[in-house]
Length: 631
Image 1 (cartoon, rainbow, N blue to C red):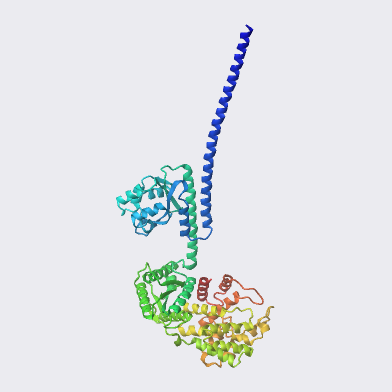
Image 2: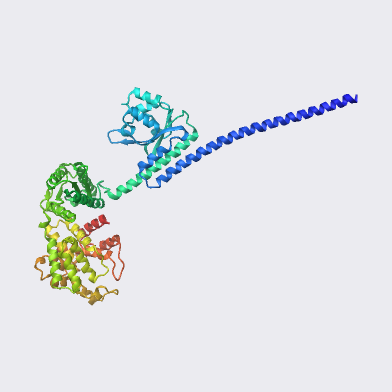
């Protein structure tokens, strides 16, 4: 009995051990299987992380490019070439929607340089980038534009046929059958809240996952940012060189381009012509109809110039109602024909309310009239002004520079003053200045006049800047043209601007450079400088007798409170009034021993306060218009 009892106990214990072992085995199997599943999940997450990191690096690369000031085309090409390989993408492109007013169409801005596209282009002959692609309302592109969502199509052949219907069905089938692409994923692009175009990827898969959609959305956002940044840059760049009202180039661009054209003309020994155009009666249009119609007249001139200019011509709005056009390779005869064509087209253009407008036009030709560009611009200006003086709405060809004489009169006057030692300056300086004036090979006569006037001014005003005299003369002449002064009056004004303050040379320097407030006696002493200039220095020079009254009265005020004669209003020569306002402006923006210089805007505000007192209102308004344009 004990034997069987012990045997049973042993059996029970063995069963317990077997049960324990079996249970442990099950636990081990479960742990093993769980480890295998975990390793699989880790591998999947690692792959996802690697893909995510790669995508982030791609996006970072694009961002770095956008901050490297590269051209938009280069950025877009790099973007589309960075996407193939991601998630089985075989090809990518960026398409822009266009509208020329008559039709809507699409163009490929950039596409990846891959095997797939090379094969397609061999088959279709004309590359997609060289085509005007068809835009239809029932296409994949129109659908994604309407919904603003990413769309996918498996019908690659139909999509290609919709944008390039001239490609035969046979070639489309060959393109599709020989391609590993299974679908096209289309992502709409927007810049500054307006639809721009589409970003397309050709995928080797038919499915489109949520994670893939998120990635393509982020990728498209980088493209949109690149396009937006480039667009803003182009706008700023365009604004820097174009006139906002007309779309023509502005003065700054014109002057830079003119330098290049002169260099080209000198190198190739080829003429070019300049057309100067001034809109007639703009002030009357503004006064009678309002400034909106004045702007319409200005824009009409610009449109006529654009329609009648060649693609190689360069047109600019120089400010106000003045325009210039450069005609490369055109002599004076050809330029006259071109100018007359513009004049006639403008005369025949019908406008709302104001009916039509006309323009006074001048023409000058480089090499024919002068080989100095400043002379050419001045001659163009003079010819344009002559058209205005002769009745407007006509074209005038400039006279050669040899027929103009104001520079010669000014040079002779300065030479006479310096030779006779009528002013108290050192003999060495007098000789240096005479050499500048009498050596045309060393310096352009007009530039020599400006520099001599500047140097004389610096002898009694050390704070005077070189180059200011030229700016003064140009501003005074522009102002005179606003009031249709005759050419002779303008030439006299040029000379008077160079000489009007020469009487200061006869005053004590300590008086002119005094920091403390002047006494009444000292102020009266300074007021004598116009009389000194007119009667003691300039009176003996016969060539400038008609200039002396201009200088003598350049401190007369509109209300009669000026000096030396206390004349008022129309009694004051307009040329004297112009000198007074130009002189006042430059005195304000230059430093003085007793004060710092003002900004141009501050100086204009000071001048405004004396409108109707020191100078007439019309003069102030035209002056402000000119200064606003230049500053």
